[in-house]
Image (cartoon, each protein chain N blue to C red):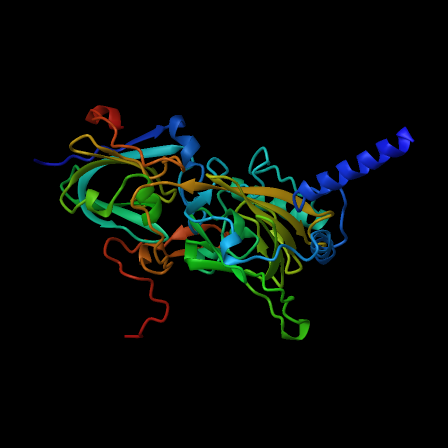
Length: 147
Length: 289
């Protein structure tokens, strides 16, 4: 299957509440677009489950057949774990559709909002309530709804 | 006679109320943190003689109560509206900081992996753990393995001739029943949080920590910082129990992934270096080729 990148810039008001502090760990989030989101589809190259931020690297095949590695930043392992995201959930080769707030300077990086796996599981790094168990995987989402 | 009886009753009631009042909520204003702490210590006759079997149970994993974000005072209506009564100089500094942030120009000193320092420590996200012993309490934040030690063995602060600025200051305290009263001095300057006001190296605090119920631990904090605050700043911080199955507090190393390295631009903004997948740890002393 040839992967096609889906790149859409949208204003996503529904995400703004939990995107208010996307880079809470150790740096300002001002380098990311405050209101725009981007969605790409690609193959997981590496999932860096690290502090102070984790990075999900996804290789996207562009329309001219070149590839670009996109990096999506989230908080560190304990925050991901509380959101039900384990290191083993995203393996190299997995196909994912990822939404994030892109870097203002246009480089292929973004603050991770959500990743949707091929089986429809949605991985959102910043939504877990504090005093309850992590949210269970949400129901399958059609690819068109992931934009 | 009746008046005398009523007055006596009122006096007893006021005394009882003052004993129940949190550290920072007393109507009385103190000139500085030392006067405040010493008054509380006198009020509680030096504190409860604590033994291991009488310590309250604060076990578990905790985190700052949800929905507060970067606000230092949870009671603030927004990140932009501080409840601190700032001196003109520090109010101007805060205003200019917010104007820069609105333009996307923001640099956080901890971006270079230094600790946040206290009192900012109170607001850092992530996991917390509280280890209680009769002679000292460890207040632990997962982020950069950051520990505050509160000595409750009766010692005083480090003498002035031995003192030097500390990230989390020098903390001594006493137990008032199940509440831990803490006095912290010898701090470094910093900011209460991103988009929040700055504090100076004269900042000092008096805290009262207690477990409100099985799922909430509360810190009632009064902050003194004469160059920055017109009057002491009283805030209440709450930490909620985290119940995620299988969750453990791990070592937290800031430099383990070079993709997290950021730099400050000429305008003062923050920007990623972003070397890409598989970058490895941040290497600050690179070998010249």
